[in-house]
Amino acid sequence: MIFKYNERVNVQEICNLRQSVGWNRMEKEMADPRLKSYYHIAVYEEENQKLIGFVDSVSNGVTDAYIQNLMVHPDFQGKGLGSELMNKMIEYLKNAGIYMISVLYDESLKDFYARFGFYNLLGGQLETYKSD
Image (cartoon, rainbow, N blue to C red; front, side, top):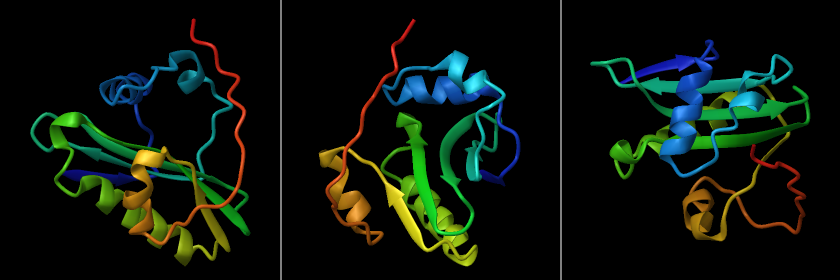
């Protein structure tokens, strides 16, 4: 596996990975030049350079960061890659001096995120996305 840090990732590869994990492709949004990342990590299969894992973060660079879009292609799940991506992202954000790191996750993933020290807080989310 090849890890690439904060390097440009092909939009179609991101959309393909999103689809492989059962998410919507969001092609228009992923291609929007206004979409900015604070820090992201992409993982490629060594043999064919296929994107097999990804995690992203957005941040104000000082007090808060939000980890989003943790994805591992189904063919590579259950091998520790998601945990490795989370550990690398958390380490980077801590070293950058970020005060608070947040993540949203489905209830079924509570135990996974608890392993990294995340705990439940009350919050809310309003989704306005409509697929084409």
